Image (cartoon, rainbow, N blue to C red):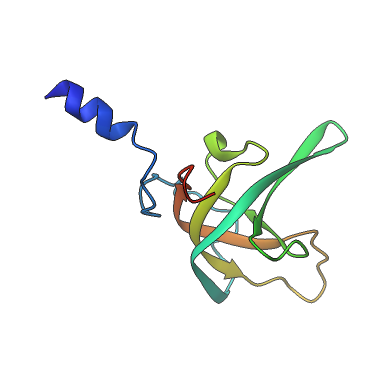
Length: 116
């Protein structure tokens, strides 16, 4: 029975975007949700910035709009990681200039190798 459970846990065919537990804390929580994204496919891009780095999500087919998630698990912050996700797109205030669109992830799953 334990072997079966281990095999199922290692399966790469899981595309259920609710398969990953997301951190509850989000610094964008107080911002209004302006739209939602549902079961979108995308890629993680990590960009060095001085002594730090930026971790953004890019939707497939849209390289011009980076999304920055307040609750992206550290295990997904790897350049080139392919994901399927749902999110609340948060507002930016008129006096702000962001390099990315803030989002709060509501569901997240790695894409299987057959879907990449």
